Image 1: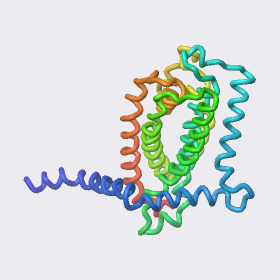
Image 2: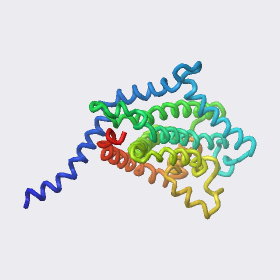
Image 3: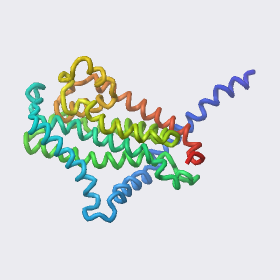
Image 4: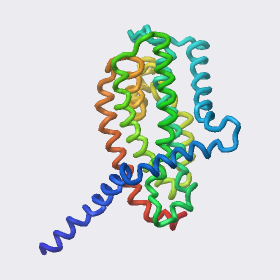
Amino acid sequence: MIDVTHTNVAAPRAPRRQAARELLALFTTHRPLTIEMARRELQDRYLGQVFGVVWAVLHPLVLLAVYVVVFAYVFKVRIGDAAGVPFNYPTYLLAGLIPWLTFQESLMKSATVIVANTNLVKQVIFPVEVLPVKGVVASMLTQAIFLALLILYVLGVYHFLPWTYLLLPVVMVFQALFMIGLAYLVSAISVYFRDAKDFVQVFAIAGVYLIPAFYLPEFVPAVFRPILYANPVSYLIWCYQDVLFYGRLEHWWAWLVFIPMSVIVFYAGFRVFSLLRSMFGNVL
């Protein structure tokens, strides 16, 4: 009786220990492979084109410029004065759009990353858990460039940076954990449910209007405001706005929500991926 009980208790712990070892390998043994695959993804995407990897920056840069021109100069939206901060509306807009575009790109990649790499998935020795992460790393590299440009813009226009810019590495780390967890979840589900990529595309298009990037939450009618607060990406955006725009922890409660949420999503996504990947080869 004692032996049977011991076996039943230990059995569920075995997958957890295996998942912990794989996570450790992801940040140690597989780290060079992940970085190299992310670098190659950026290169291969624009292979043979005249401007090459410049398009990795040019595409979102043009999109950001369009948003800034339309909302800041055509509709002439003003937020800085109302929020009691020294920065202008383009800074507010970019503080929300830059992390959103990174999140959007990473999510869309994850919906097809396993199916698009069937030949690698079917290789027994290849660490499949690297595939969803490489897309996140590539997206974060592009985001780092845009954040550097935004910092230069703030310095050039206002000649100072708030102390909250020191928190930028912190929020980027938890953003990466959040996106990796979702990438694991979406990539695993997409193998069994191919329509997932279409749901992701719809959310990627409409989702930008469901986050507080163009407007303050106070601008949203009260009946629709719960949708804004129910969107987990909103908390990511609020953290970035605190760092890049407000110069203070205006949304301190968003940090209390987003930091533990990113860790939970990271671990839960990896657990689901670990459970489902055993049948990837058969389904593909």
